[in-house]
Image (cartoon, rainbow, N blue to C red):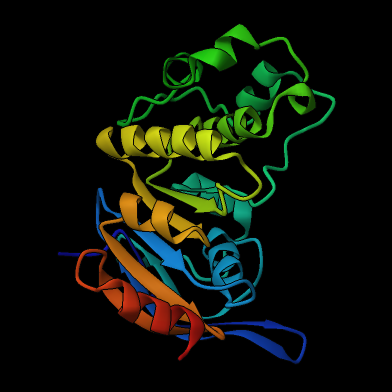
Length: 233
């Protein structure tokens, strides 16, 4: 089976500081893969490299074809969309306008449109004219996910989508992730919340100091193995 998205020997640098070391990664069509690890483990740097936001060494391949070195706007055209950490909504725009920022006029084979996103998140339809910053954290996260989905991505990259949210909001967001998976979207989640990650993922990659310390099916490892890979002891 050819991976939808794959990296070989991926490395990320910030000047002389190396954040990611030689990561080999793949995700197959329809999978949800979680990248877990402590703060500073290199997870978000890896995801930003996948999305084209920061440069990287090594190979990034989509459907077996190299997309290495492409900028973020090209990655979106190729079918890779990022839900960024902190949501990064446009503060002066309404919920509706934030969602439509990524609209390209094509519903795509996964059928994501403004209307179907409002079906996934009915509250956003009710708050369509409200300024995005006036929403709760969980509601803003729904907007951020919807804004990425409206591009009809092959692969949805989600960076710390539970960060700063209440337990109830985390539950709602991950219920949406489950529904998005059912509709055929391939999903990569970067997550510090182990319980949320393990409940959503088919497979996991654990990062420790910029390297993969554990990789496999989410149900393949017991808690002690995961914690040892997570903390390095």
